[in-house]
Image (cartoon, rainbow, N blue to C red; front, side, top):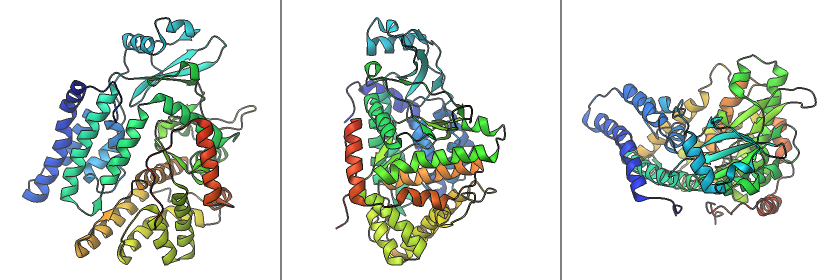
Length: 466
């Protein structure tokens, strides 16, 4: 359910600003597909990017996500939205004072030794201010923008309209569960007390791993709309790469990224749902710090049922061993149903692309460094095959709700590793993580970690196949 501060008029205002963009996509696609009307989709995509980039809220994040799903949007829109960044200016000091007063009371400034009035960073749902506590700790205060509950609900309605219209034009993939996944994750992201719990969870899961640092929440200064956490110094990954660091340093960052994402997944069944490059900073090796990454933004995480993680590993084994029957069983554990041999073959091509670096026991780049769009093209080729098979049989493929975040993480991380131009023995790193894996052990670790961190149980888990 929407949170309490959602308002009908807030939704109406938001929908008035976004409805033209969403329905404009559907009208142009329908016109070209059914009426033969030629439109300048590239120009409209650029306009759409400008509209969404100027808005605060989740529509920008949704657009970035949809741009990674083949044929969810026309190619021109996907290409533009993949590069979308927010250009909306941060809220001013008047907003900051109102928000901080509402969350911590009229004497809120006395809780801090220093509080910077200018935002240090802006995100989709809030902005971050740097501050210092009386005990000397440097902290970051993330303040949620006004009326975000209304914004989320309005954007979700627009998203549902757009996805429904596009589904009518292309029935190859059934995306209803994809919408439900996005809806649930976005609503969870509004609750900063939940994000604080998820920060605690990541601190538990990554333990004392020196390659990865995560911020720690300051409980007494955190509410549903204010998250205060320790400030982690670091530099943007792309800024550091512009200085052409040595291979040894790039490999440290790559190992940190690999651990940050896949240690929680294979040991606890948890994945960070937003692999955007802005969500990790790098620490250059200096003094006692061997270097590594800082992982940020824990508003969207995904908790998977243990049998699903077992299916992920069994699919790896099926690709490695060329075992068709094990692959079919693994896809069923992922939530795919009633797959023909041909459809399973197309999906297996995607799995082969993802798992190939993990099977190859040597030091190597994670993919072709001269082709950073390889992942997207493989996905498009697979979708083309599914579409042709769907047209032949009249059957569509239902996309399980767990699949999108897994898929997005794989594409996002592959892109990050390629930009790093890192060379690692990915096979050995992966096998170290899954050594001794069992669903029973994962279930025990997952339950204990979620309980210790105080993370509410996820409602979105796929039941084990009968």
